Image (tube, rainbow, N blue to C red; front, side, top):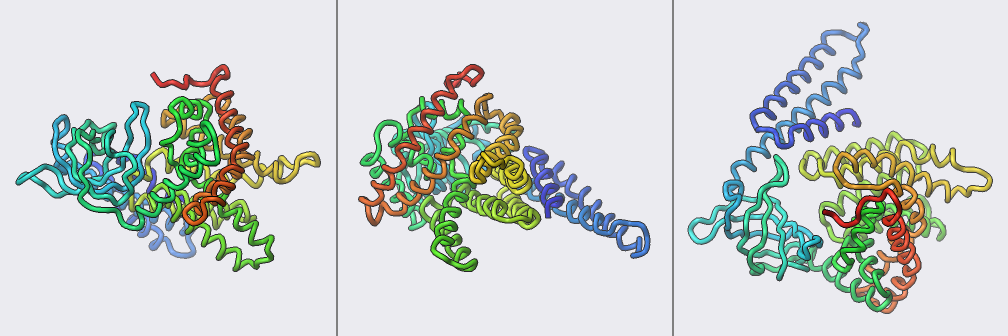
Length: 456
């Protein structure tokens, strides 16, 4: 599973932004290579000194690489033919659906994931789907996923070759359709958790709790976001595989303490995973986090690396096939890299760290932080995401606080809609951990060598 998946991923990454004809030609070459490997294995016979297994893996890798190149060729062709591409630098009308929750930007506006379904106005309307990001201000904040809108926009240049153009909203959105339950439910949970945080917490902690639990950064000040970025702790504000690992791990421990058997613990973990997705919202990032987090948890609780690694390869395979753009993005690569590091190295490192004066729990926490940080550091550097020399010590320092905030905060988010008083108690219990997270970020961002927290 691993080698063919790597071949598919590398081919997809290489063909991003490539002309459709060139990507298709690469796919043909890889397909021919796969056929040659199959024929060679078949003609060699069973008694010849030929590694038939290696040839089979090579054939599968080339075949998947050819599929990846073909998918990218088709995507590039569809993108080049989309009406928005020819309208870069102009104004137009768009109609479509919000596909995710908004995120704040330094300018004071928000970024809204949006699927364009029709472009133009009046008789010039052309129907064609394209996933883009809308930079907006008035009226766009807080729109639940699934909301259908129409607006006037300016079409912006793509950030890089192979990316769709961006949009800047010129008018507030005109609602043309209400979101479904999958959008209204998580939106209500977010709104209630904001209210719970305001009742239970003070200062920056009010915005930090929804940010760490749900990825809702709207209540976090620009200065605090800059400090978390400069200290290497910005990843805590994004829903990642670590969130699901902590939540599901807490449920497994609780089920074991109650005497549940193996089947009962698995059922409880599955229910917790489904509940986490329902509370946070079934966005692509959340679903990816659920998959990678579950695999990471399986790796930490298992003495075998083969099955979790194969499962991780399967997740990567599906994401690359379904959504090549997301699969080659920094966020997904960071999640996969960290999970692979946990699968391969977290347990051996933890075993080596254990000493009579170092408890097993402490060794496990330090091993997870060190392995994940060292594995993702090259990705952070290659993607241009700044991380200073104090990122590793900062992540180790906050490691005990992160699971507490994640588990109690997620429980508060789930409890808020049905019992606000209980949710307030759980949120208030997060106050010391949130204070520690904010303090570590502030200190690390101010140490010598840390990147400038204020982007130029």
